[in-house]
Image (cartoon, rainbow over all chains, first blue to last red; front, side):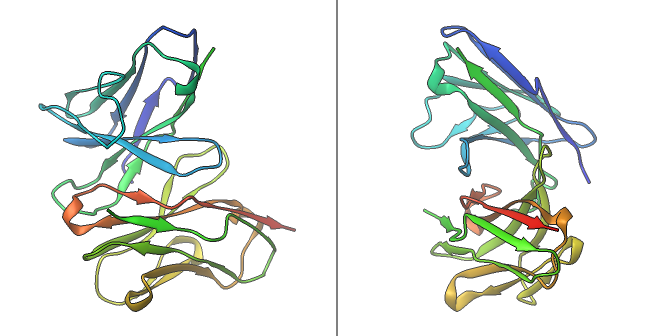
Amino acid sequence: GAVVSQHPSWVICKSGTSVKIECRSLDFQATTMFWYRQFPKQSLMLMATSNEGSKATYEQGVEKDKFLINHASLTLSTLTVTSAHPEDSSFYICSAPGNPGLAGDEQFFGPGTRLTVL
Amino acid sequence: AQSVSQHNHHVILSEAASLELGCNYSYGGTVNLFWYVQYPGQHLQLLLKYFSGDPLVKGIKGFEAEFIKSKFSFNLRKPSVQWSDTAEYFCAVNGRRGGNKLTFGTGTQLKVEL
């Protein structure tokens, strides 16, 4: 199946700094990617939809100025957590649909990025 | 808005026991349904999916799930589990009008003991 990578796999930062997380589709093009957040022992919560060449679409309650998303190319989306605080500590996962033209098609998930804000 | 409920949060089974994990969803239209699995230290992988047709779908590693529209359910089953099935299992729903956006259940942690 298609492969999605994330970098870094884990990051520790100080409160107030910004952290960038990359999501790449390695062997296919992704005009759309999704960013999720997973709290310990909880489900994945969709944060935003990243669209290549246009603005991201954020889910209700997600601060777009806090979580900046840039879909720079057909294989790369980045999530920047700005002015990170300890409550932003979480597991961030991205995914990309194998066939964005087929609504509801299988999504391929990255391995996730563990963010810890001190 | 769509939502997904998984009632079993933790399940412990012995090898060769049968498995059934419950999943119920709420959505006012036609849905696509998925089960994803996350093995320890690995990323989410698709087990099986239902789009249309036969409501009994078969996935990888001997798993199957049955879509019962009247009950808004999509329960996951396996007749005989193995130790290697120890993982977290997520049911997910995609409303046809929502594009590719997935709503996940809270997950079920399955532990299979030897």
